[in-house]
Length: 268
Ligand SMILES: [Zn+2]
Image 1 (tube, helix red, strand yellow):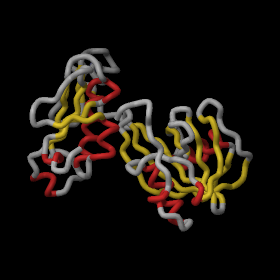
Image 2 (cartoon, rainbow, N blue to C red):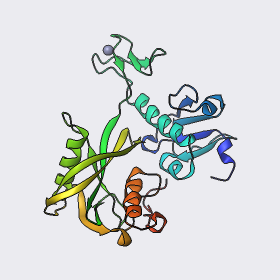
Image 3 (cartoon, rainbow, N blue to C red):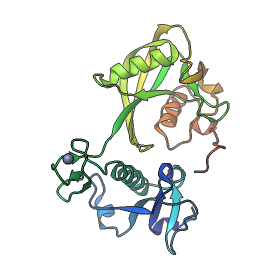
């Protein structure tokens, strides 16, 4: 995005739902919690849309794929874009009541879709997932997913199962994906991740032994890496990268020297 372009209204094309009629879902600053007074005074808007392929934005509007805005938008625009994309998808997938099957419509009283027949409310779905920096001495545990660019690695992650605490999920996911047992599980930070509707909850943990063995269904490889010999890892906007940068910094390596993976298979 060119310098100064952030003063234009932003439009997010939610890439997973390309097809069908254009459907715009504006998120106005000031109606969202967590924004600064400056944001609330601003007249700018971020809009998420489901668009047909080949769609061109109207004059004065800048359009980006959702993943593309991660690298270009600063705050608070990025938070608005992620929020808008999450809500746009939720609206699109909440058109019928799960209780009686009747059509739903947005309500003004809540941020919810309400059933036209039985008044059942559907609230936005958020799917929590954990993401973990596992360390053994001066090495970090990284895995290679089949979805990652060739030769690239990241920290381990997985969705929370019903009945689990977040710490339970950390211990289970790391054991299942790598064979490694962990202890000293500590909260690190979190990040909304609307691909399609996650909240990534970051943790640090220490290895407590086990036999390194990748889960064939999830990972091609798991391995320990020293800070000065890290493979290509996710870009800076992700909590995965924040966890890896934190490890590098604590072991005397400048995060700016850590290689970043390059996606070649999907635009934005
Ligand atoms: Zn209903």
